[in-house]
Length: 154
Image (cartoon, rainbow, N blue to C red; front, side, top):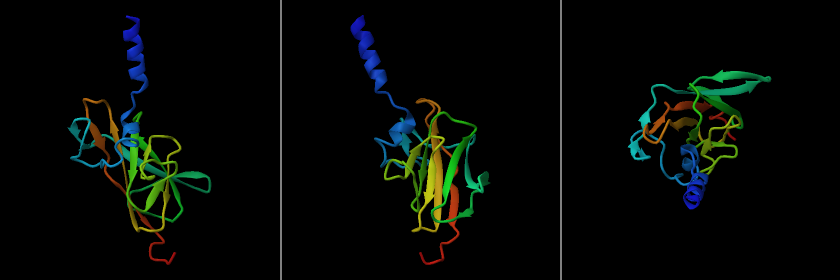
């Protein structure tokens, strides 16, 4: 009996969340509708949306999809309604501070911040989450940004 309990405790200790797996073992797996993860195809979420914020003069400001941003600007993320675990993924043209998967992914964290690079003019960010293994993975609509200094020489 004691051996069974110890083995079960060891297995639980190695269990990782969906978000953690997507930033460690599955960096090459795309987070887009139709890709199979956890035995099911990813579907588009109809219930959650990605909210993006920036700070202007110390005040939090909501950023709308399609907005322009500056190179070097830092953006912050929230999923509504709240999800306890999710992973963010960005396209080329931006990177997550302390990100994983070549800084293109970041697990849910209040300090997840995206830095806009200077190479690309259009950037997109999505959030992926899973309520449980049986429910499969869902992704938000892409959140689009464009660089306001894209036509300037850098």
